Image (cartoon, rainbow over the protein chains, first blue to last red):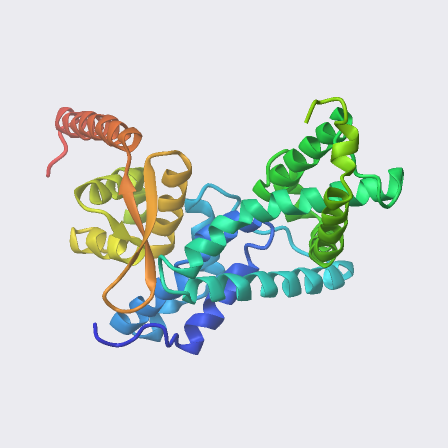
Length: 220
Length: 110
């Protein structure tokens, strides 16, 4: 096989999009796992046997779901669920675009790096939330390291990591509720936007020796 | 009983056996199953089975570059998977033997 299979045929792309759409009720990670290699595999299939072999995406999705241990059919969206479906499609489209971008990166380079950074982001956003909570409840430049505050940071980190992993039912919640997904996107964007501000707050607190003041009887 | 029914019962076993022989990516495993005689196996069934076996801990996965361009996700068997394969082979042999002897007893002609 000398042909570069990165030039995916449009019918394969459309087929996979349709299959993905029919799995929208599954956990996003599960759906991603099931469909990640699909374009490349189907492209190979089409190369060997022609595009007619693709068949009906609905049948394909049903077979895939059943073999993976899920219910064969997605819960149908009703008329009133159209807006919801549209938002889901938009979010999925963004996620798929991101995944496709990651997939296209050379193996072992930036892709592995970015994937490894994900947990770092989970911790970072918890820290941003912690700084924000302190600002709101204790005043804009009062960043001390008393035990309760550190405990709060620990709690926020744990929640953020569990959310990132989809544990504690977060995964199911995100799969079911469009609102939850939008909220998560919004909070992530907000956290990114607040990083520079909170970072300079932290720098200020450190340089102003707030921590020194707290630890004045440590003997330092 | 058409072959799809028979296949469903043994797809786990067949997939584990193929991956045990050699690691492979999705379509590669489909090809090997078909070349091995299971021409009717659906690729969607194989992908779903791979995912289910992975979730059950019988398979591991890793990404590796393939000859024709983009990276592919390869599946390999785990110790859990090998134990499961062994168990299913025994079950299959026992089952096939039982069906065979039942047919003989009932006087079925081959």
